[in-house]
Every structure is written in structure tokens, then in C-alpha cells.
Amino acid sequence: MAESRGERAAAHSIQGGCMANRSLPLATQMGVEVQTITPGDQKNYPKQGQKLSMHYTGTLASNGQEFDSSHKRNKPFQFTIGLGQVIRGWDEGVIKMSVGEKAKLIITSDFGYGAQGAGGVIPPNADLIFEVELLEIL
Image 1 (cartoon, helix red, strand yellow):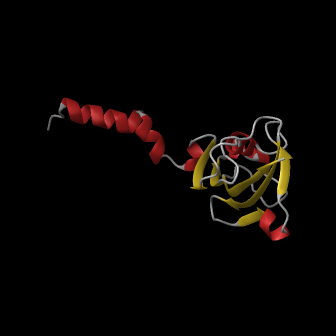
Image 2 (image 1 turned 60 degrees about the horizontal axis):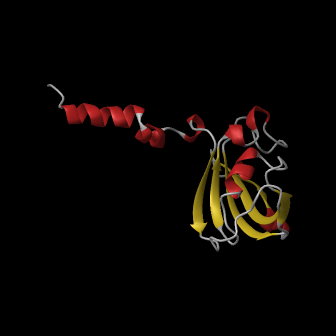
Image 3 (image 1 turned 60 degrees about the vertical axis):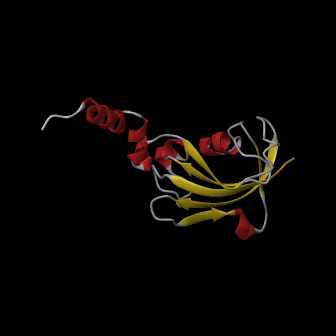
């Protein structure tokens, strides 16, 4: 059966265009995706070099196993954004959030801990999911 021009165009856009990336497993995409859970003030966004206070829970994308949480310590995590004090996925994801925002950061291993993993709790090449809240810019 012959394909129409429209069917060929649709097949091409799904296989090779923007739609193709949406169907690929997380591990074949690179970077960080920010999914807003609760919007912040949408006015105050961190800038490189500013110190931030955050709450977070980190889990492995593969099985949902929690590996760390500031909530369990009952103490917000503080760091300076954009200086490499945290994994690249945090530096590039959190800077897109506004104060008060709660979001999910979906981070591929190359923007996380890479081939080395971390601390015996994050295996090599692990994709990560962090639920984070930007409490304040200090």
C-alpha cells in the first residue's frame, strides 16, 4: 500500500523529529528536566554565585529507592549555585526555579554522578530524581 505524503511526513516527524525524544528512555536523553509541582513566587530566581537554602529528597530513577533527604535531618541544605558545589543537574535545574517553588528534577547520570556513582548508595551511571523546594535566597 502506498503512503500518502502526509503519512510519510508524520512518520518522519515521530522517528526523527522532536517527538522522537519523548519516547526514548531517560538514559538516552541528557541533562535535567524540571517539572514544577507547586509554583513559587515567579519573581525571585537565583543567580549564579548566590547562596540558596533548599529541602530535597533524592531517589534512584531505576527503582525509586531513596538515598538522601534533608527532610529526615530536619535541616535545609545550603549551597552556592553555579559554582560546581553540587551536581550539574542541580546547578542547571535549580537556577530555573523561583523562591517557594517545589519541583521534581529528573537528572541523567551525566548531569549527576556519572560512571563513578557516589558514596556506595548511588550506583555508576544512575539517573536520579530529586524532589526539591527552593526555600530562600540567602
